[in-house]
Amino acid sequence: MFEIIKSGGWLMLPIILCSIGAMGIVVERFWSLRRKKILPPALVPQIWQLSREKKLDDVTLRHLKNSSPLGRILAAGLANSQHGRRFMKESVEEAGRMVVHDLERFLNTLGTIALITPLLGLLGTVFGMINVFSALMEHGVGNPAVLAGGISVALITTAAGLTVAIPSVIFHRYFERLVDEYVVSMEEEAVKLIDILHGDRGES
Image (cartoon, rainbow, N blue to C red; front, side):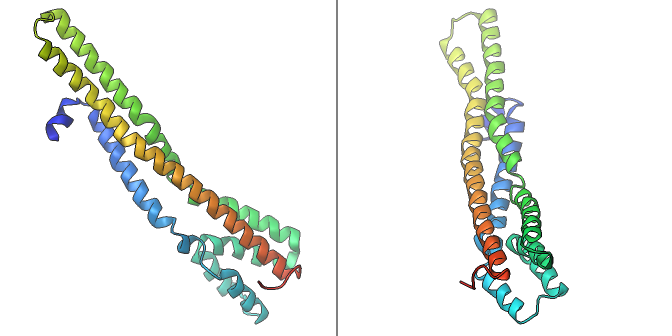
């Protein structure tokens, strides 16, 4: 394996660094985007119960804000619930934008890695082919094995770049879809809470 990496030339170094970065992002996002952490179950009914018992004080709201992304959105709405439905909804939307930004953390980096690693691999192949043709000009085509070996080495970086890029694209798309699903669910929970607090419907 080390010989293959060495044969790929210096461009294998940024490709390897990209693979390490992509792996770290994937592991971190899997850990951070767990459903129970983002959308704690039965949170809205718990808040409704606290509201009926008049226990939604500043300490409770601060704890709710720090408990989860959904809690952060709901706490923003609750903090402004006395100002009416419209102002409460605007507060929820503002907090939601910040939460979505946090949920999408590192996804741009992962997408960039998926984009540049094939280009790095292609660049390495171009340099390798230049070396092959330079060798041909100097020594001719008397030894086909040398030519085949040079082309094989030139293609190593392309293979390495694609090996990093393909799973990066897959995970990038997966996490984007996951964040979109969480955003929809959080919007539904926030609307449910607004409706409950302003008497449009009872607890469900």
